[in-house]
Length: 254
Ligand SMILES: Nc1ncnc2c1ncn2[C@@H]1O[C@H](COP(=O)(O)OP(=O)(O)OP(=O)(O)O)[C@@H](O)[C@H]1O
Image (cartoon, rainbow, N blue to C red):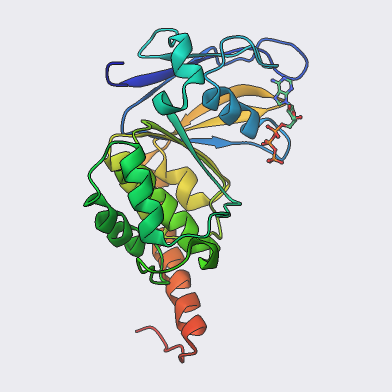
């Protein structure tokens, strides 16, 4: 399959079976798009439609196009051709192997060079304050370490050009850096979030209500300025958490 340049979501129906107002959303490589809306409004359902590359065959009736066309049937079912990777809030490793063994195995299964393993660990360590070492066991990693490792793994080893992220707030990971990393690799990043840093980092956000896409808000310059300010506060909070976790004393900021 040729390179993925964009995805298009063609509108379906809301929970009442009425056509959703937004009929088409095109998302390009390297773009971060947010999905926002009240609890139970249908955010995860939209993510699921993208994950399954829906073709009018899900309850929403939405259709997902790849490069403006219906994706070939084998892309939807063959795991090796998987277009979409998903990062979720609750991530637990079940395999009892070390970080290095796991990454080597993943690189091999994707036909990639095993030298990428150290790059993944290095990148993961830029996303978490709790250092990850190659000999660490997967099952002993914290939530933040696991998510950082999976983010770096998706950026470097996985071929999936589309990354779906369902709520990463309070995840113990430098979320801004994580999103920038994925978008910088030319991925299409779709993130469900109420976190102001993440929502405002996206170039646009799709507003969901009653199961339907009702609006698309383009992030304004003013919102981007707000995003810069709150991300400083956010990083500060994260470093305070690290200081406290280490058992150190918090110092007054200048
Ligand atoms: N367009 C739709 N047509 C029919 N059912 C829908 C539609 N959109 C959402 N639903 C249903 O509404 C319910 C809530 O949707 P969903 O879990 O996606 O909401 P959410 O916004 O992700 O919620 P939360 O914020 O609690 O995670 C689900 O049972 C889902 O199947």
